[in-house]
Length: 136
Length: 68
Image 1 (cartoon, each protein chain N blue to C red):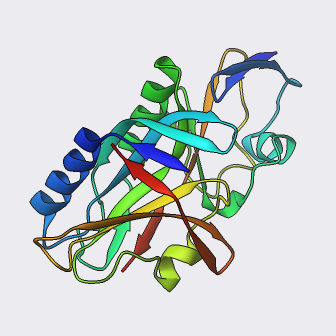
Image 2: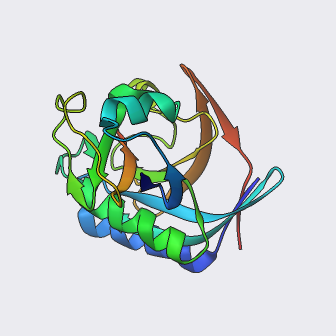
């Protein structure tokens, strides 16, 4: 299970809408307690692909985020990105580039602009499994 | 010599290369790793010849990307 504050959810949605038509992306940092993860900070990073079909995190911003997490006693929990025109599920490319089976991969679909859908996944090889996401 | 890797100080052999450190740290998917030394990005393809110095601060960054 992974918990996300509603204010952080809204931050992700607002950033993803601002970046349209391109994909938006970022990192999530927080704490892990057994099987439960709690997101304490959401990082909004630049998609250096500037594309509506691909994303790559800016490495310099990624480094700054990792350092910030460490300074704040947080651990990297995974990343998030948006799908402007497709559902909230990992694409083949998302699966291919998911290197960490313990990470949470969050995908925000803006396919229906009025009803954004955010899901979180664990990805192992070419298998993606949705994990329970609690937004409160 | 002492270096800092991902925020943790550790003793390593003198003249250790970045490639050796990656191997020693059992880095998963090394093909997707970017390395910084003292906040400078190490050019990929030069890990074998990049030698670490005492006091260096090393970070491993994993490429993160995808597409819809």
